[in-house]
Amino acid sequence: MATVIFVDTNILYHIIHKTPRTEEALTTLEANPGDYIIDTVVHNEIIYASTMHYLEHRYGVKGAYTARKWIKKHGYPREVIGAIRELIKRLNIRLIPSIYTEEELYKALTEFRLLPSDAIIALTCKH
Image (tube, one colour):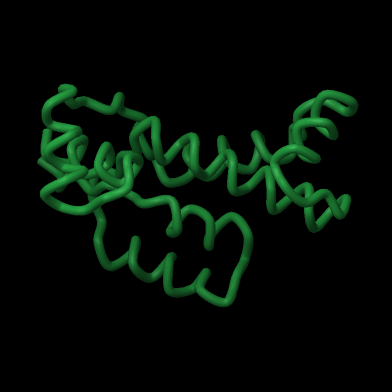
C-alpha cells in the first residue's frame, strides 16, 4: 500500500506557474512517491491563486473585486481550469473532502494557532 501524501497549495502553484521554485517542488514530489491527495481547501486555494495570477499577468487585473468584474464580463478563464485539471490528472492526485467537527476546528484554531484554512487542512490530514 502506497504512503498517502497530502500535497499543499504551494507545491501545485510552483509547478503550474513555472516559478524559481518549480524544480524544488517537482524534486520534492519525486523524492516522496505515494498516493497524492488534496482536500477541498487546497483545491479552492489553487484555483483562486491561479486565477488571480493568470488575470494579473495576462490582463493586468489586480484584486478580487476587479477579478470578479472581469469574470462576470468575460467568463471564467478556461486556461486556468485546464491547467489545474491537467496537473491533478498528471500527478494522479485524489480530491478528498475536508473532515472535521466544529469542536475539532475550534481546538485546532486555538491550540495550534492556525488560520481557519490551515486548521481544516491539518484536521483533514489527521483523518
